[in-house]
Image (cartoon, rainbow, N blue to C red; front, side, top):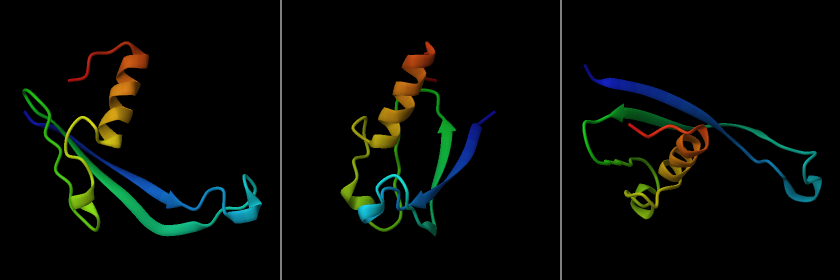
Length: 78
């Protein structure tokens, strides 16, 4: 059985100009992640505007964030 889930993260303009930590702007932009547990290794596939500029390996920010979360929680990533 394939284990798969989706995550939607809203964009924001936190720390907007001179209103640092007091002003922000809600945007109708989202980062969509589809995560699938695969038997071995790592596979990162990127799509959308600017995808060609992002790393598709363990240097990827999303990968590093998930690995840090697993490490701090004391779990081995799948």
